[in-house]
Image (tube, rainbow, N blue to C red; front, side, top):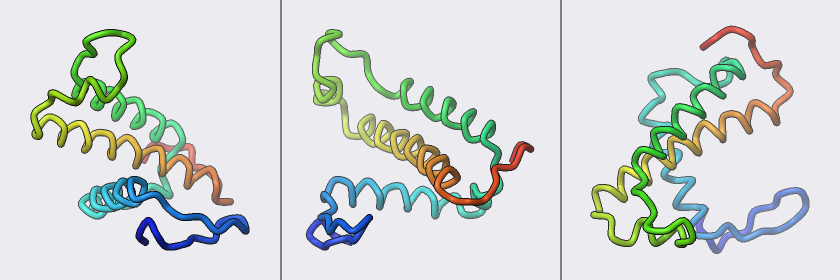
Length: 117
C-alpha cells in the first residue's frame, strides 16, 4: 500500500504516511529473511520481552552519543556515515518487529504459551 491509498480501520478511512509504509516494508524484509526460524505465534511472553530488551540494547549500541542532552534526536544522526545510519535503521526495524510480535500476540485470542520458544 502506498501513502496515498486509503485503509479502512475501525470505520475510519486513513491515509498511510509514506514513512510508515517504508518502515513496514523494512520490517517485512527482515521478517522474510528470518522466515527459516519459524514464527512468533508460539513464543512465550517472557521470550518476547527478553528479545525486546536484547534488541533495544543492540539499537542503543549503534546510536552515537548525543552532543547535548537537549539536542534533537536527528542531530545524533546528521553526521553519521551512511553505513552507521544503515546499521541504526536495521536495529530499529529489529526492535519494531519484536514490538509487532508482542502487539500481534496481545490482539489475538490465542493463549500465550508459558514455555520458551
